[in-house]
Amino acid sequence: MSVTLITLLKRREGMSKADFIAYYEANHRVIGEQVLAGFATSYVRKHLHPLDGETQVFDADVVLQITFPDEERMQAFFEHAGKPDIAAMIAEDEEKLFDRSRIRVFTVEEHESPMPPPG
Image (tube, rainbow, N blue to C red; front, side):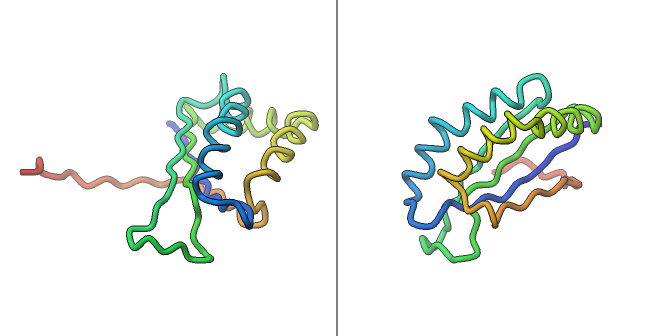
């Protein structure tokens, strides 16, 4: 059974949302793709834009969704990503982008309701 992780990420202080998205998608995404290759089946970044246009201090700026085919592949990924050279590469780039003290990671238990077609 697949396992999905959701990570809430906040941009570092002083970085604009536009610069955050541009850097994430041009640079950090590539690191994610390289490190997740062979482990994850899906790597999705969901950049958040408040409907009222007001960013609150507690808000996350992006929801990261990573899906693994099973628990074993997820654990293998964590072992791989925990190797000193890989962990250092990730951490170095995260420092340029995120408030690392605010990173929160969750596993997902999903319940979906069937909906009639819009119309």
